Image 1: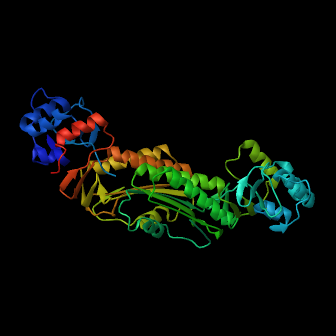
Image 2: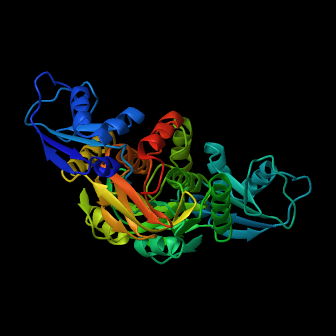
Image 3: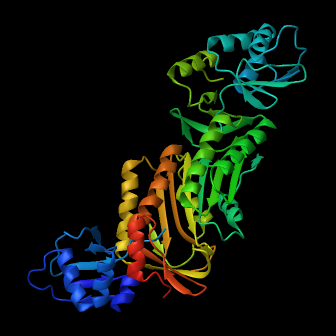
Length: 83
Length: 83
Length: 155
Length: 155
């Protein structure tokens, strides 16, 4: 599973992208976020402090109850500020 | 008093502009229109057929109860279609 | 605000509008073009008659109203008169502001108000002759009377 | 729809949008520019990070939604990424239609939707360092948490 981080989340995790194996029992975005928080305390801290972290699965905006599976591309980022 | 006609009203009266003396007793746009209808039967016909004739006094849109006086510039035209 | 017979260059006008002002965050514009088909017939040209003097006054009034309602850094109205060919620009309105919605809303306001107040009249020339364009804001009954008044015929 | 690092020419883009289509009656556009001042400080530059792949998909989705909602003859989104200087264009959206309101409304729709969906993030560089721009749609409570999450400090 490919994970991407953008903007200040990328700066916090210290990596723009990483490849992980989805642990057994993790089936949703929320579960994946908890798992990633264990790998990156800064990620957990950012999410815990306010939760304004958005997610895309396979390049579509999704909510935290969205399913995830090995092979997915999952991205985390702050609310977008383009335009 | 200077009178101006535009668009199809100009074609109907046959003149883009004319100078008239305001007759005694004519004090409003409505009165002036009745007077002009006597000079130009085509003007009276156009007004009578539907009344979609607009008026400006001294280059401001006005209603038919607006006062008129000698020295005014009065224009008659169909609803505008610019833009 | 300008009223002119000559065509204008939209890109050049917009570039001039914002030049030198780096406080501007957004520019909204609307360009009206001569359409080749109108009322089911092909046009060869369109001629705009206007009321010199009052046209400029009305455009200035409309622009002043927009500047009073929205926090704008710049605004522009360019309107042509005379004979134009299909595809040519008729009118450009543009507004610039630090704020996106101020620019977008005031731009729509300018073209809407201009359409009901600026003293222009369109005469469309094409197959079968010429025709004075009817105002769209007229309701059905008014449109019917309008047809009566003009004879609803090519002239 | 295009995502590119290079600046673009608004006039050229608008001219290309309508070229050869004389059925178009109106073109609405919105151009976003880099502002020199933000949050009370002077910026030297602004850098847009984006999510290659998803950005293009989202812009195409937004554009498809506009085309489904309004009778448009043409539409355009050009969005830059990378480093930009004050006064430079960031984004251009434009819509063309036979009908004025379709063009104006769909143009406002495109820029509004793009702002909440297209995967871009602004980093403003200036006096004191760099700062990730906060999303405006966040309510007050969310903004406060956002400050907590980012430390609310120049980085």
